[in-house]
Length: 386
Image (cartoon, rainbow, N blue to C red; front, top):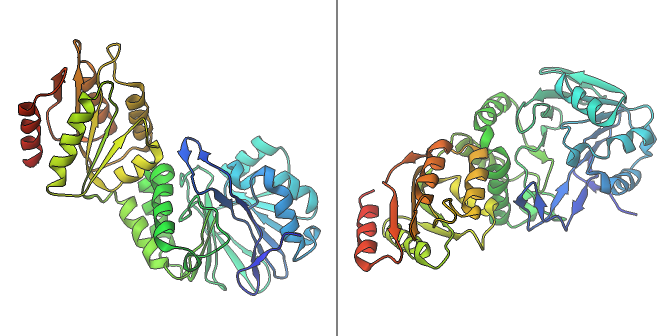
């Protein structure tokens, strides 16, 4: 039998680890993920969230290692998205007396649309549920990252059940930050924020402000590793990311047909490297989600494409589309590329960069056919002046 993992004297992790998940809505998840659910033992036994539907039996088995699932009184559904709520109908069938608490009206509406009529109870900001010696305080965090999203705070345990906030897509049996390699955890936390929450920086700031009165000694996340030792670190990072703070760093992204655009990209990278850290990404060989993670905190972004059929390369268009959806802020950008005769791609890239919200900091770099050394030297001089 699969066993629950004890978190405190009264709280158990009863979720599931997905070692093999490799993509999440186009976001590459090379280290897998977990679907975290928590069982609170008190006068009223409470389950915080469920798991993705294919893992429902694992959830039930872990709960059964601690208590009879039919004794569960309350189920808290923090978020309608199926990686958190997928096992809800299954658990409702095994917990016949349980009331399902969710945000009102969005959570209740979403669960009703997805799973039909169950025993729902809507809660709003400031509502408190007494479960015995402990209480649960509900705080909706709309658009972090769905309209229904909420977090739950237990003041007696000083625990925040944070759902998607502060999480990572990371499969590990170490449930806490101090049981894992911290740089790996932080890298995955940044990637998670960049690809899922970057768009919602304003909402993240509001959520951080709403959480500030709470004394938090443990953050139990919806995905990946939870926090107990490095809480100030992850909170500080979220403050910076939500504020769209950038640092002197350049990201160069490109695709190339016969090597000319690649030569320009490498020249740009080398010129930036004279004064700041640089990352160079060939779109044929790198995941969009990894590139976007680097873009999150980098001041400069250069995007290059040759012209094909009067357009930019499809890989470049896909990158710009993905980035536009995340609404990055405070970036300086420019477009570059080579062409054979038409040369429309560079203007198209610049137009998209402007639409994304980037400040165009350098005129279009357009070179016909193979760049000369003189042209490459001129590009390096332009970069030096930025």
